[in-house]
Length: 284
Ligand code: SAM
Image (tube, rainbow, N blue to C red; front, side, top):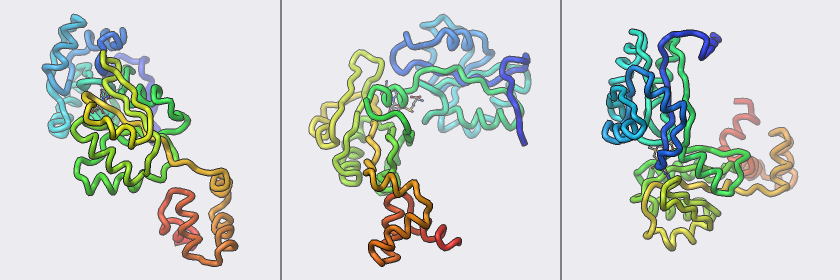
């Protein structure tokens, strides 16, 4: 069923997802300040961090804690507050809510209840790092955090390694060495950009191959984002990928006379699994 939200053509109480700075208070927008002053309540991750932000901008709105651990239990209450006539904002410690941060659950439940969801845009570490990386921005995949368990992380990287999009990954400083080491062994020595402490005094972009960054990784502190060059696709593969699956398969079959190898080559070109190619060609 189609629903239409005409955001600013009614006075109904709303859910506001408000972007906040990722380290430099000067990145706070006028609209964010205005919204946070005017809502009835602000749900935030860490009340100590958000109190400092509110104090800086002379905002006296009440704060309520709402984080990844509690959001499952607290979202229904948040929605009830809006249904009872209150305007509610959700902010995270830094950046855009809902981007590897609380916010999604509030938004999805608000939409279910017919409540308007208003985004007050702001900085996100993901797009800031991407734009500063100098890697192509034409198409990119935001992955967020990899799994902290090594075997799970390896599985995730295996799935990501054949994607030709630029890849955006968030990483914690205490895991960066392990992640770069796993990346090197699975992706090969790809070109990457590590962007750290964005918008802060010690902002730094490290651009080079994975092994170059691994050489100095022990020096690196603070918050960081990895921007990874997508898998390079040669001209022939690009042309083959434009063909129908049948023609693509037949191209390799004519060359090799080996159906198994042909399924594998098509799957490799497209960055999908062999079984998907097999099933599609055999209409399963
Ligand atoms: N919602 C946030 C956003 O829109 O950017 C992201 C929150 S996520 C929990 C935190 C991660 O974002 C950090 O571990 C780091 O990877 C990245 N991050 C946040 N602030 C950053 C900064 N100033 N410089 C570099 N990376 C940052």
